[in-house]
Structure formats: C-alpha cells, structure tokens
Length: 119
Image 1 (cartoon, one colour):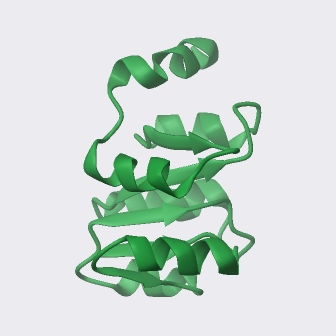
Image 2 (image 1 turned 90 degrees about the vertical axis):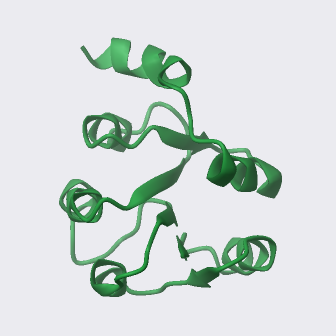
C-alpha cells in the first residue's frame, strides 16, 4: 500500500490515479495506525507532530518514505537524511519521477552529496 500525504489536492489525485494500490491520507495518525503501508509519499505537513518527530515514528514502523521538498536548502533535509530517508524529490518534478522513485529507490551515491554537506 502506498499512502499519499502531500497537502496538495491536485497532486494527491493525480498520484492516486497513476499509482496502483494507493490511498490519499489527510491525517497523520492514520499513517501511524495503518498496518499495510509499504511506502509514504509526503511533503512537509503542518500537523500536530513536528516533522522530525513524525518522520521518526513513520520510519520506526519501517515505512519507506518518498519525500517531496521545495529545494535542497530546507532544514528538514538534514533530519530526513539522518532518519534514513534517501528517496527525496525536489521541486520542480513530474508525476513520472515520483512513479519511477516508487519502483527504483535512490542509490546512496545519489544523496551522498547532501550527507557530505551535513557531516
């Protein structure tokens, strides 16, 4: 099961159409309670959890995260990398890029430059 949690209604619908076995989610608690989640496609969400705490809880459930970020200067990039979130897509992007990321996880070499910058 792929959960879509982007806070962008149009993007959510388009991804939901293209990704088999996917569901749009509006509440973070649902993600943490769902038992069959393999992948979460997410953006930084304003919710009752702060980003780092929420993503820690998601990763603690062994859920793979594909994170969509504005750019590589956002402070959450460091937190994502520390939590083992390596499937990161920067805006601008297209739907095919997201769909391809589901099928082909990022290699360490693709994100090593970001890790190097925070070490």
